[in-house]
Image 1 (cartoon, one colour):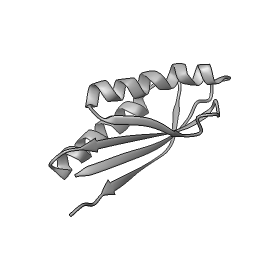
Image 2: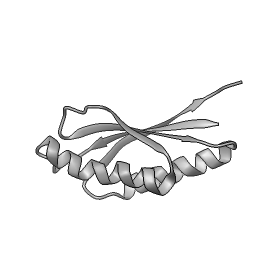
Image 3: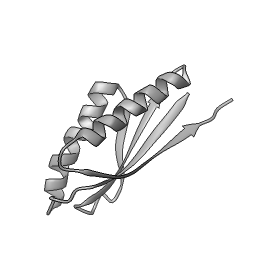
Image 4: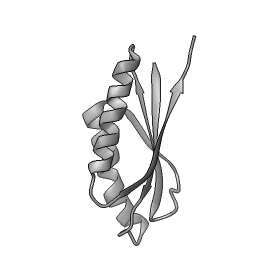
Length: 95
């Protein structure tokens, strides 16, 4: 089973792309290392107060993927310096 978490973020205190990177990099690097997931910023790379981050997780069991994505989402919500605007999930259905 493969699942993706899509999170739209707002960085209210960031005044430059450098500020945004300083807040976003610990989130993406931390999620990668703590949860063994793939993480990428997929939209608004040129804006200093917005971002869309996508997280992909794969496992043999759907339950494991759901638990992993839940943990990553809680981790992102807990990070200082950013606001979560919205979060959605996508599933890859393969036969």
